[in-house]
Image (cartoon, rainbow, N blue to C red; front, side, top):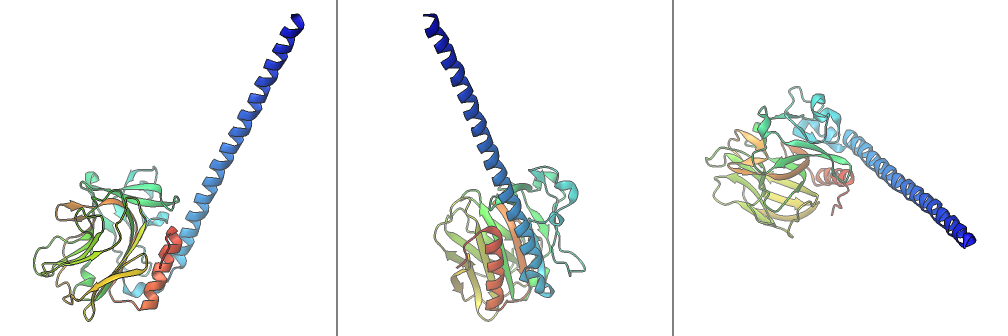
Length: 293
């Protein structure tokens, strides 16, 4: 009986040791996975920063109206980079050759979007607009009476997302509307408010949290064209330019607010050549891990 008890105690002790070893191994695996994930995130972010600094966008800076992106610390005020979820009052224009930077700003804290790490490609920060009252003001006067082209990288948080860039004037061809068509899951609207007919492009339904590259092109000779992830969705023969474009915002059009994350907005004051458009889309695709057609 005594021998049996001793054997049982020995067996029990051995089991505890085994369990301890197993737990240590599991802990090591978890730490290893976490460390690997962190390394991947850091590598992707570093690559995104390198791609940004070496991209074709910098070579086309003479025609840049604004360039907003989220991977560089220099894109924001250093005082607003302290914590995940920090309010952002200033999204800095990344056009290094601009004498007067076209920063997007909001002084009222209640209307400021927030910056979240790892929002895109699980590694690149995103600027989050809550769909209720968040927006930024910026200057888009350079595209008045001009051809222009807008690239946007974003992911909406639900199908209720609305306009991404919008003006607040309500005369004939006086306000730009770039973004989703109300609450529809598959329509993109690209319009000059008051022109009579909106350019609405039907695409395969967008899903919440899908990372998307939008390309909006206006040319006074060929009209409006929209591409999704590098694939041309359609063109509309609307040739009238914007005759004014006052009080332009990122994240708002009238009473409709954008609900989602923005990573990059690039605006040119001319129509780019096909190879230039493809080069910018390729840069954005490589940066955010988005397959470009």
